[in-house]
Image (cartoon, rainbow, N blue to C red):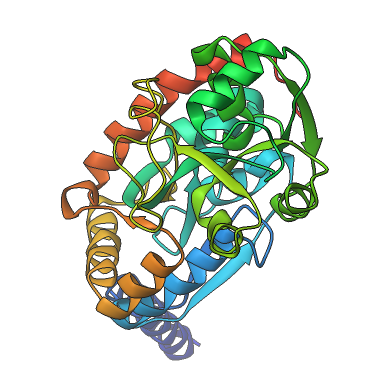
Length: 330
């Protein structure tokens, strides 16, 4: 009996040692050792989803692991942000956020507020300026004329918004504030129906993410008044800035970045950032994004520290405008 008990004890100890050793070796596996997930808090097929899928391919090559795109939509992108924020902080779940999800949503949705402030940045990816566009039949032909016409006809024009607190919505509030104009705001469910109504003349104006206007501008089916950036947009350099039109300092861009849960180790973040840097240096990726109208972040902007500082500055600038307007979640 004693010999049997000793044998069982030794076998148990050996098994326990094997289990501990196996567990230890599992923890010691280099990162990443399994597929990653990028949460996109917007619908499949939209511009943010498209960016995620373009970026994921070179990142997959750099990291040596598959990357799954998971679309988690709803509540102004706050549900997707919260989903990523609550994931294990091990570097296997990221979120591709933008102005709407990481600025506008945080000002309106308690669920997203803390998650946005607590998540750790990885890298800024790209941006596109916002642009004031309108139907071709509008009387004014340029930005100066548009502002003068709106002042002469207060409340007459109708401008489309897409999502409460979105960049497109806040852009129009900002435009009114900076130019002393007033016009009606008409909510739409998405950018696609807005562009259709602009082309058909059913809506007067829109503050659009510039990249979504390219095909319409090239076809001559809508009119661009000015871009809201310091310099002209490389994809359509013929369109002036508001600075050039006599309204200095009116800037807002639709930018994109990557974040991970707040307790993700610094070494893991560095690995992810290196993969982004390598990916954004790839000529094929750069060409694809440029053709879509993206302005790729500079190397200096592709660091966690740079994204953290930029994100903080955007929150400081835009949250007061969102909150002062008493924008209610849809």
